[in-house]
Image (cartoon, rainbow over all chains, first blue to last red; front, side):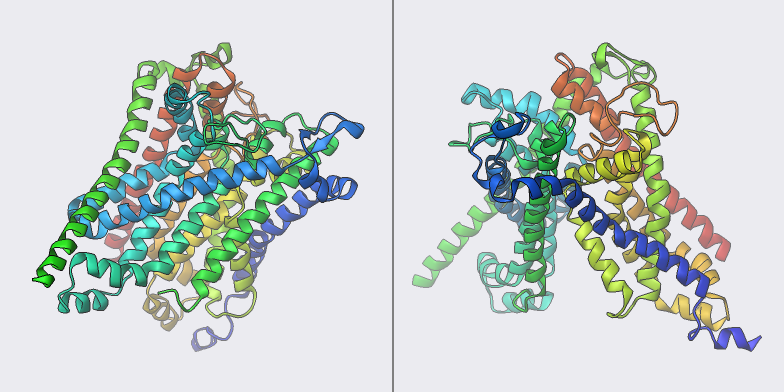
Length: 294
Length: 289
């Protein structure tokens, strides 16, 4: 009777442990499998065209065949970076303002309600945001400055998509400011503004920054909300009213009928997208590890 | 008097900041209200019982969404049937057996963090290449569900691991002191104690899966007929909204009605799972007494 219990810690349940270990290995292998298959599908294009063609080709005519085919991904990369960058520029101050409302400037009861509403907004599927942008937002922009389906519409829809992430994570960062620091500020008789400027923002800076970086990763990978409103014309936009096509939209629009090299180049677009998102995520991770982060 | 001037300035800035914070809050509320009001205005007139149970007519311009609802639930079912066992097992492994910073656990965690950052359209590319073509599943509910399973795993595992870690160590020690085998301790003590947290993880996963469109476009496909088996193509609600809005002129109000159904479904599942977890826990704690 004593034997099983005394050996409990030295001999964990072997079959159970191995089952769990096996299933964990399956979960861990998925990302490798994804990279493997996207690389495999992209390989013909990388091998036959070389990576420079995607930067140097002046246009995007992947289905032309033979020597006429052009595979320039640069306009799509510009579309992705500009739409995400614009959305982050809008969402970051809005998220901070919303965090300040929920933590210090708004009445506590409204702060909770505000958070719940943000969670509702976060639960709205991106295709629904895209649909709303298509039928409500783009006609409004068209009245102001045609054609309506534009970089601006894409930026606004992306902002709606990433605002909940930015706002909720910013609020968390502000809440993590130690109570002792706030009490010390209060004991010094600092005003609310001085506390904010001298204590809250410096201490929460790392958390606020990583909220913005995580949100930009989300914006870079977003498909539906931009696909439906940004117009999808392949060009480097000269103004916010010009239509653009992002890397994600390019894949969604063309994978259905793409063949051979055209299909392979779409997978190259996927690789580029993964690369950009990976850089952003690595930035966020290094920020969280850095000692300066409060 | 200079200090009172500074205080005055301070107060002015403070008021401006307060105003700004209120303005942002109103903007957020206003945007949500705007989106919901527009969906209701356009979609509600079309919404009825018949809309839910009828077949779509004329590419979805009229009729209902019965096959789309069924396909969505089947895709979700496949997704959960695969992702919940793998997710729960991985979460148990990470939370119960890998408390240190060495060995297999950190590798699994790193791999899952990377997976969480993969854009959904890349899951679509992968699902199309792997499930649809390499495994020969074609454009099918199975391909779509399996692709979604890969996508929701990191979210599922992270929240389930958090739930398991929140169970006090005393529970496990008490079970060990009683000489209970580890599987008994996990099954009858740790898992029930973590149930509400696990349910939250499940809700998050379901919400993510229902909301997804991009990963399904090229895995489960567009076909809006009633699926005969899991190997048939099936159109999810999200894909239906996309198709009606983009490819079907005059489909906007039907798309709005479908969007209402999708949003309502997400809220309903959230509510039900929360209620069920509470009920389950309630009966469990009374049984323990």
